[in-house]
Image (cartoon, rainbow, N blue to C red; front, side, top):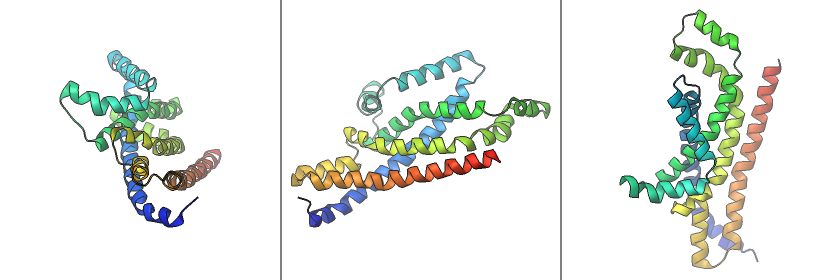
Length: 220
């Protein structure tokens, strides 16, 4: 049976863990946004070695599980390099690297949607390569893909329980610790599900609304 007193007793601890979950998600997403853009630019590079390296990295990361990658960063990387990362930073790095490969494809679709005439106009105005990307291409390529980026942010938020496998004390691991002490599973895990739902569902509605608004603006 559901015990409201017990649920209210453990709720503050879960909310503290939720804060850690949100922070890890946001920092991981920021890493993925930056890494995805760099990968997208590398794939379009005129240097063959850079293109092949970026494509190889994308293929490797996208075809291996996130959990395995996080384990490798946290456990294997220190053995190979001597550099040991705390679970928090290893988790952020794992999320960032994994999702940067997916966001690179999102950036690619946005870049390819920019009309060819915009590239030609930048060349005619004698823009440098950097100025072309910074002032012409990216300002047109990024706004249409913002809703897709928002969807990936929500997906990443729901993936953070994976980080409990490397001892990051996020929401799920906190619930597991509570269960190990009380041997009550109903309230902790139910509250975890409700907290994830309370953030991810409204966020998905906001992303959907943003997408509709941007579609209407493009249709005008």
